[in-house]
Image 1 (tube, rainbow, N blue to C red):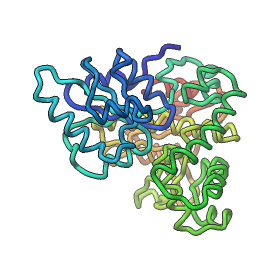
Image 2 (image 1 turned 60 degrees about the horizontal axis):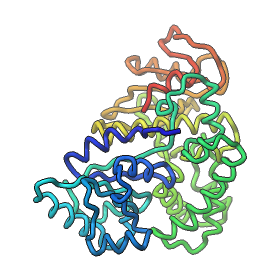
Image 3 (image 1 turned 180 degrees about the vertical axis):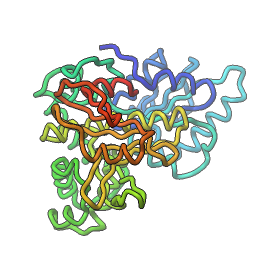
Length: 374
């Protein structure tokens, strides 16, 4: 399927003003998107290709009006290099559009200095979603749930090949990507952590419990979780709370960009919804400069709502996930009563009910809500 990715219009608009950096997980589709924008394959330069690397270092750059640098952040002096190229090019009659793509290291190392400050826009690219694929039924969403949102396994339309891809992807992430940004003594234990984490999706993540399970230190578990976040393997969602709702304040929940690693289908559904919400939040932050946050709610009495979207630190949406038709969640009612102006949704993975409760809560198939997001 020849799909124009959702960030493409924003990238093309931003390229008219500044350089554009596009970060995101490995194999999420950044290179395909960049090549489409470049048009001419000669405009695409990949640092991992020896011939392209030589052209970059000699500044023998393409003659077209677009330059695409992929994985250039693996070059130690990449920031100063891009600064020099960009500043010199601005003084020409027809400046080039400069697009830079990369994965974990691009996001990590762009904070290492301010030499590029004010010269670029940064956009994060996420896996495929209901809205981007223009899905209209829960059956279509079911395919996405089974195959995952990464382009290769999804468009391959084979559950077996999707499982094989997922296993190989996790291995490459640790063995190839991780070793370029961090020095980890025990990769085997880190891989064990990656295998353990999917079983803990949906509940607040206790670092102490993981520490005891793997027999490693609290400090090591905390650092490894941070590494996995930087690699776009997982993301964590902090709790939302104010004194008036007696919310918990510390323990975060976590989810996986590749939601197919979660075996329990109800929890996989919750994970997929989390990915859809984060994708929308990141795009609105990057492209619209909105002050949005993705949180969850849990209080000391055990009430919990899966997701809370904040804007300017105030809740604007409450989202609860249910695998099938169910009565409206008492916890969702509780939060709706305390924040009546907030939209409240109960999303159904396989259920077919679609109505608004007397409390003002919309209960509907998940695809109804998810197709409104980026």
